[in-house]
Length: 109
Length: 294
Image (cartoon, rainbow over all chains, first blue to last red; front, side, top):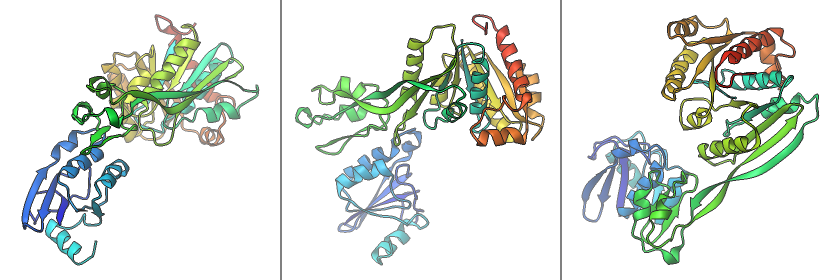
């Protein structure tokens, strides 16, 4: 499984970013290879409009199976994400990435 | 003459002033009142309800903006459209192009730069313009469809309608949107004079300063009307004196005005103090050079 987290930093200890479109970073965890990558999305702060679809387009390039985030993407981003087939899990906005991963593993999201 | 009524803060009395000033002037001459707050137009509530004279619809017309439509068969997936769109209204997902019409600003960049003409521009309804006439008062309002995010194109087309249907001498009063962002710029940019209405509170004062800076940047002639005068503090009045901003009128804080507003009624007909303040504004406008009130 390839799992993407919306985060405020680049490690497992980083706090989750509850936002989708304007998340500061993505953490990309490949369970099969046990490898953690990150993507810097901070330039989305400069987007007056359309941060959601743009971030969703970026996410598409990582071809994830699961997205773990906080509040959940908005309407436009959801339209894009539906095309990618990714499973969206919300409610992890107040956790660290590690806690969010464990919560997912325990079926709590 | 074009007079725009704007504010920084919302809820300070733009619509109250616009509808009362327009109706008051229309007792003696031809006036057109235009509601440019296309996201939530409400001037019409006061025009309909005060119908001593039966109002007649003159025009109701659909307004369109141009947005790209993707033609899959022509697309080579080169990605240029996605790169040139500043608003992320065109997104490429592998072998698919998605267009978000609500985000589109209608700049034509994707359409014009597409090497295979796979994104022709097509009209999409964004709202409606309504024009009614009651006595010497013409009333025009534009209303965005629910879900539409772009106010500017509809405001721009409403200006065009006004320029085509009324001569330069007709007094035109534009009820503008609140704030200082793009829709306000579009609503006020052609005005000969801008009335900034505020309330004498810390919030009203803060946003007035932003509105004043905006009007200075646009090189507009403007003046200030203080609404609900008597609440808050003297900061707004002191600021206007210090900055040499003309203080056109002070509308008193009066429960009767709020009650009339809540019933959708015009104020000046029942509260003489309002008429006096309107007279002060009209007297000031009459002194303006190049096309002041006759």
